[in-house]
Length: 70
Image (cartoon, rainbow, N blue to C red):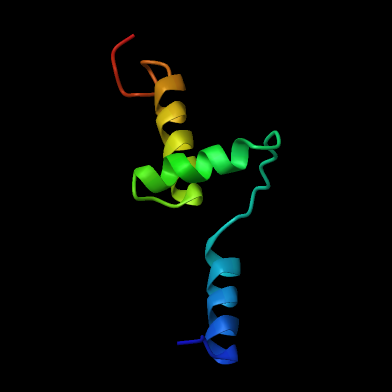
């Protein structure tokens, strides 16, 4: 079933109001690798990238930022 123009417009409006966009450039061939990796985990490339960012930010935090006693 195709999506109506009204639904497409509503979706675009929602995305614009609720998300920021970041363009990521990767070397040729890497996109296919990332798509395959994400698919094996049952997630989208966007979901994979967001998860990877979240995990790295968490690892990069100092003990003080994590609420620990340093």
